[in-house]
Length: 308
Picture: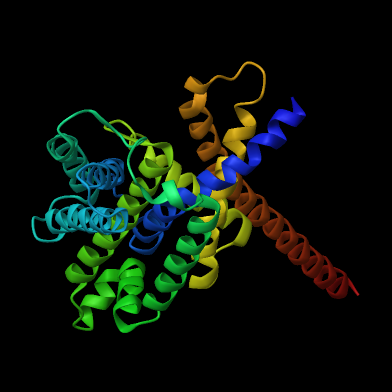
């Protein structure tokens, strides 16, 4: 069993790199904008569907992948418009767009799934081990650079305190729309890569992506903490790789089967959320006990001094 677990790790790392752009997208909405965006479950499939359709129609896989990114950006932009201009709750905006994308994705692909096995896609000529690390590094560095521009700083500030930013005359609606659009563009980009690597696009492949993305972000933060943008984007990538390794190892444990994947994901997210909270509570209690002990020592000293 141990040998089987070890053999599964390289494949898990490769999957982590394929899904890394998705975790970066979730990081933008979940951590930077504080926007609970469920569009992710639909835009992931949108990217896969656009890439698969264009590749099967003879277009360049690079162009198909770029168009998948653009399609995800468009989906996220609509979600941002529903929230900012339509004044719809952020969570509800994402749910509405996720539901709409189910039909839109079927319109794009015409059929529930598209095979890419005999098509010339990216990984037909380039190994994922060669392409994906390069893509992930480039995307990460571009994001880091973007977050240090004026627009990127405005986006980060909007997530921290949008009321204060509005009081300075900034257009927070625009930054939210751009942020949600960019986030879903990265998610769709990941969907395009995954579809080409696994050899098909399927209408159900995006189900649960938001939970997986959150798990990766939370796991990464538990390791690296919340520091600079450089470390934050790195933690989202590493968190996804670790998540995939944990899933791969867990599925090799006797008794677990492939249909248990969603349960394992839910358990990972639960622990990733509970452990940091429990650690903070423990540190607060320990600090409170220390302060109580110091106060008691001071009061005891004053009482003894007063007695003398």
